[in-house]
Length: 100
Image 1 (cartoon, rainbow, N blue to C red):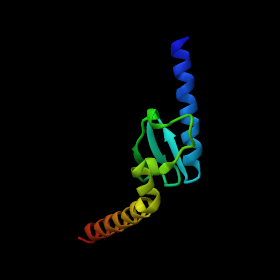
Image 2: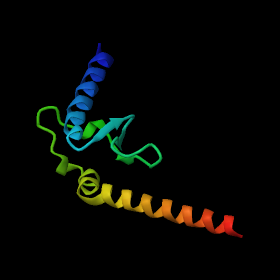
Image 3: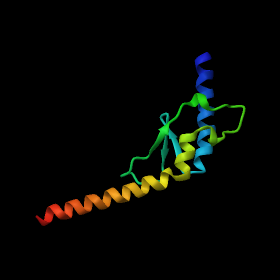
């Protein structure tokens, strides 16, 4: 019985955190916060996450998780800009090597 109740509490923690992350296009998968709005060609991992950090008696406040807040405030746009730059550099490199 003890193991079953721990599992149920973890499911409740997961659901509670997932509902807070959904507002920002983020998903909780296998102990990792993932940005599901990014294309599959990009690294979608935001940060690791431990379920024990979620208090079932309080509403989830994302300000308790600075990595997630930093990503929402600017990390996503930086990651997209970096991906676009890297794609442009790769195109230029391929074009230059084909010109040789």
